[in-house]
Image (cartoon, rainbow, N blue to C red; front, top):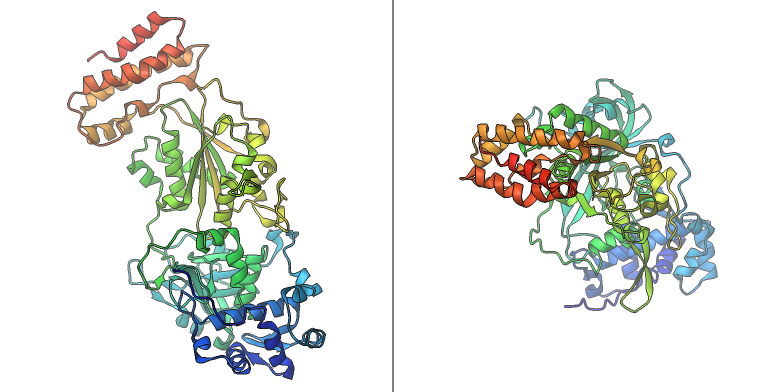
Length: 601
C-alpha cells in the first residue's frame, strides 16, 4: 500500500520561513524552531502529528534537512552544539527572495559550491586522528559486560578492557588527539528518516574529550573529558563501527561529517547518506523488503572476549597445511592485502581461500566474502564499470562486482571484506583491472591515492580501495591455456604454493570422518606419492601437475564401508582421465600407473 501524499511543505519550501524566523538575530535551538515554524505556518494538529514509516515526525525530519541546506549555503551557522543563528548572507537572501527560496537559490552560494565533493588531496597519514572507542565490557574476562563511560569520565581516562587486540593502535594515540566514547547498536523504529521499515545501524556518542597523555601500556590513555552538555543531541546513523578502537581521519566526506557531528555540533545530513548508491540500494525504494519482524533496539558493540576465527579453526575445519604455514599465509595477506594461492589441481585452493578469508574477517561471516570466477571473456566493463542496456533500451553506466565490493568495504569500516577470485589468471588481469591495478598496492589503500575512473559519472569522487578490503586469488598452474601473470600484477600480490598433503593430518581426518583404516590410507598416500614423484620428474609436466589430496578427501562424513571400491571409483573416474591427458602419447603408461593406484595392500 502506498503512503498518502503529505500536505506538509517540502524541505526546500521550509527554508525561507525558517530563515525569516531567525531574522530576529536570536540563537535558536532546533526544537524551538520546529514549534515556532509550525505556529507561523498555522499547521493543523494532523499535520504536526504526521509520521514517516519509522514512526518519527515528518516535520522534524524536513526541518532538519531544510536547516542543513541553509547551513550548506552559509545562510545560517552553528554558535554552539544544537544552536543556530542567521548570518549576513542569510539576511541578503531574505531581501533578494522575499517570497520563497529554491534549491537553485541556495546552490548559487559560493560556500555551497565549496562544500561539493572534491578529490582528496591530503595524504591521510598526515591528517589528525579522531578516536572512536568502546566502553562496554566486563571487569574480568567472562564477566557480564556493562558500560564504563561514567567510570572513565570520573577518573579522567579511558582503557580498552583486556583482553583485546588493539595494543598497537592504543600506543599510537597522541596527546591532543580527540577521542569519543561511542555505543553502536541497531534500531528499527523512531528513526528520523524513512527506510521502508528496515533496521538502521546507529552510534550514540556518550562522551567526548581530548587525550592528554598516553600511558604507554597499550591499554590506557588519560583524557580531559568535555562537559556533558556539549554532546550531540541526536544519534549518528549509517556509517558506524562496532569495533572497540576506530581511528577516523578527515579524508572523505563521511569521515569529515562524523567528526564535525561528534565534536563540532554539526547535524548529520541523512539525505546525503541515503542518496549514496550503497545505502540507496540497501534502504531505497528498489531495495529488498524487510523480513525481520524484530522491533527491538539491539546493542552491537564489540566485546573484548568475543571468539575469533583463527588458524586453529582452519585446522579443525579440515586443513592439512601446518599451523605455522597458515600463519605465514595470513601474515602475507595482512602485509600485502592481496594473496594468490597457486598449486596443482586438487590441493584445496578454493577451500583454503575462504578459510583464510574467515581468519582475516575474524569470524565465519559469509556475507563479507565476495566470490567470483574469472574466465577469458571477463572484461573491465564486467569487473569495474561499463555501459549496459537498461530497461528503456538506452545504455547506462553499470558498476561491476569490484566497485560493489569497494563500496561495501568503504561504508562498513568495522568489517574486513574479502574478494575471492577463483582462477584469477584465466582473464587478462591488466585489462580487467584497468586503472585500479595500481591501487591494489598496500601503501595506496587511502583516499589521497584515489583515481578517476575511465567511465566516470558527473561530480563523482575518485575511487580508492580501502584498507579493509583484501583480495585472495586462486591459480591452477597445470592448465596450459591460462595466461601468464605479468610482473606488474605479480609484484602487487603475495604468493603461496600449495602442494599435495597426504600426511598424518590427512590420514587422521579421513580415518575419523569416514571410518577408513589408517593402514589403507597410509598405503594410498604412498602410492600417490610415488606417482607424484614421476609427474614432478617428467620434463613435459612438473610439480604443478601433481595429484592433490582433495581427490581422496570425501566431502562429507559418511562412513565408507568398502574402501578399495571407493579408491577404484576415484581412480577410474577422476585420476585416470587426468593421467590420460598428461601422457596422451603413452596409453600403456596411463594403464600401468592407474593399476598401481588400485593395488590392495
